[in-house]
Amino acid sequence: MVWIAMAVVLGLVGPTSAFTEKTPALVTQADQLLGAPDPSDASLRRAIALYEEAAGLEPNRVDIHLKLADAALTMGGWTTGDRRRWFERGRNAAQRAVTLDKDNPEALFLLAAHLGQIASLEKDLGGLFVPRELERHLSRALAGNPRHARALHMMAMLLLKTPAPLRVFLTGKASDVEKYLIAATEADPNFSEAHLDLAKYYDSQGRVAQARAQAQAVVQMRSPAQTRAWREKHRPAAEALLKKLPAE
Image (cartoon, rainbow, N blue to C red; front, side, top):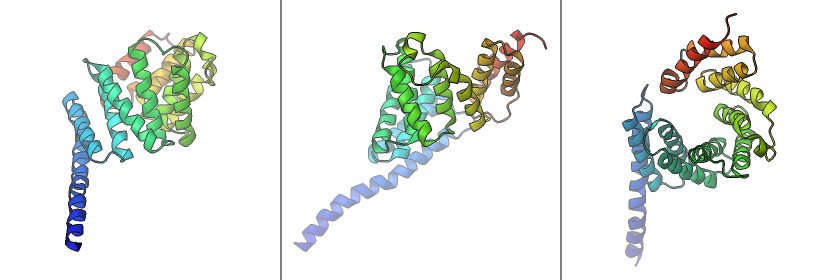
């Protein structure tokens, strides 16, 4: 009987151990694909598949769900195909991370980011409730990490772009946009998108010198956090803005 019991235990433990031994290799391979200076779309898709496989083996690993959600957010932003598919996969991963760790700032940000992207694709903020839900997730993320650059940036853009009739349901005000954008650029000086949006905000306010300074910061950036986005989107947009700004 003892030998039978031991055999049962070994039978249960053996496969689980094999799974946990395989997971690090999957995650490492995915990390390496994304760690390239300029990962291709094919690399992104492969990394997401690897993270999904790893998450299936160890579904309670918050870090894997976070990596998956982040990669899916990047993929959704670049693909010319079905963007919603990637955002939905990322949303599911972020939601799982929040379920496992309800106060994790990165998980809360990623959940808000994917929900916001899905709402944007639908060209509908979901009536009265999506902006409020996004603000709630972002506020919780910033409560846990007040220097979370991407959450600060997203909060600014939420307050800036939410239609006026829906702003009454938000705690933040349009006047807080500059504060959040400045905080985002200070939290991550290499965050080119935040500098660009701050430049655009200053331009909309007629603050030419400040708009120029932020646009120049984008153009002159040496180590952008997102190389491809900086090269293909943010730097060209900053150069275009500099050309249209009035001369000093």
